[in-house]
Amino acid sequence: MTGLLSLTRRNIKIYFKDKGMFFTSLITPIILLVLYATFLKKVYDDSFTNALTEAGAVVPDALINGCVGGQLISSLLAVSCVTVAFCSNLLMVQDRYTGVRKDITITPVKSRTVALSYFIGSLISTFLVCLVACGAGFIYLSTIGWYLTFADVMYVLLDVFLLTLFGTALSSVVNCFLSTPGQGSAVGTIVSAGYGFICGAYMPISNFSEGLRNVLAFLPGTYGTSLLRNHMMRGTFEEMEAQNFPSEVVEMIKTSVDCNLKFFDENVTVGNMYVVLIMSVVVLTLLYVITNALIKKNAK
Image (tube, rainbow, N blue to C red; front, side):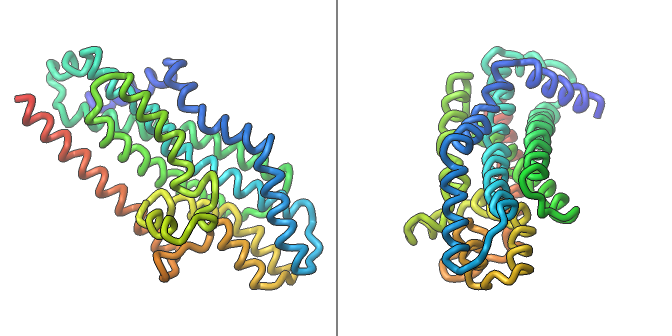
């Protein structure tokens, strides 16, 4: 246990001290914020305003800002939980490339302890970064339109933790097969560029073709994004209903931002989304354990 704690502490310190690794992990959140400030906010504002005004509803600015802000922050967190994990987990590849991993295995510390320390270190580092992003998002919402309850905040934090677990498990499995920092950076760049699209963060899946929606329904990240959207925007939808907005309009907006998801023709409940995300974490973690065991066996 002492060896695990020491290695985990070492991995976390290296991540936050390595400015290149740390700032690279913030590229995706920064890009999202720039897109929001220059383009996305107006698009989201117009989308919500048009949908509600067509129904003859008078829409307070705070309510529109709350909807738009909830969609933005949920998108940012959904992407960051995975992309930051890939960056923080680059230490595993870096240690393998520089030979530090071999030096560590010479010590009495078992190889499975080393593998676990990378996993836990990446999980903690990623979760800390995402908590800061989450806190900044809550502060932003409090200034433009706050409709969250205490339960909503707790659910958002739970969603962030589960998505961070998913991102850590996925990056751990992928990085097991990488041998150079260049390969790790390339994979991280691909994930940063593409993950936001396939999880519905950059553009809601409801805007895609039916065939593509059915394909993306098999990906766990899709449900992680929807969970964040449901909990970030639940209060604004409740406020719309309290102001007697037509229920069909509210449901249409929920569907347009992926709060309502379907697996082919079957509606997916929030409970089912949690099941999918948790099972994905379990499967990926087991795959990481098996992969490390096979690598150790081949090394012998």
